[in-house]
Length: 286
Image (tube, rainbow, N blue to C red; front, side, top):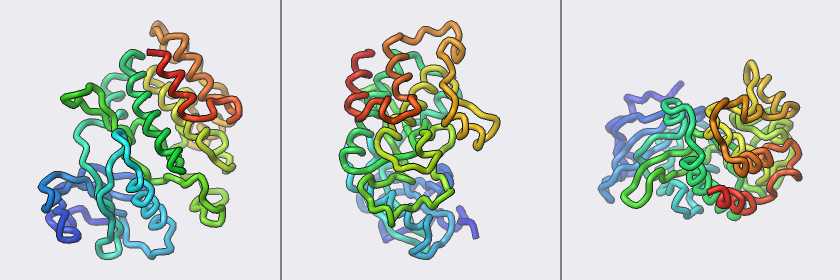
């Protein structure tokens, strides 16, 4: 049975977190706004849609999100406070981030000029570099998962908020949660090797980050199919749409175009090999 939103609103989890309202839904769960009764501050609480058995793949993926994110400490990565379960439904508690996700911003503005976009890319690249050095892949980099806000100290401060399918790079193969023939991720932002079910490393995140950056500065996806399956096929076989066709009349610096083309190479060995390598090239684009 699907999670009843009204059943949780007004309840208190672990004697600390009062659920006040629903703020969004994803593939695996629903996100509520809550209140930390001891710290007297807002929090976000993500709860699985359904009660699950401990060996369930969704439950394991949910635990992975909590465990991986709670070990990360970076200004551009959401802070995880706690996790537990309510009537068999696992939940995690994290910072409540004010602001809008980048998907919402792009829906309103279509694209961001490069002088605004590149500082955002550098922040996200720094977060992903930290993630990779901690031994994790993200595997679902997309505008939905990046919250943008203006702070007293910085305009367009970003926070990476979702680790729903984060995967430890060094994890033994017998613990893989993605079964043969099953692909976890968002088709429009997936690397060729992820689509083909091959072994992944940080260069797969670099490809997805390239799709993300291309989409932000042009307003369109670099590779589009008729549906999700066709899109995945095209990521394996087709080259990205030329910038001149993606956004006619819009000036995108040549240096940035070169960086993005490299991130979108089909063969991982032809891309940037680390996020730090990519960051250096992005910083040169400012």
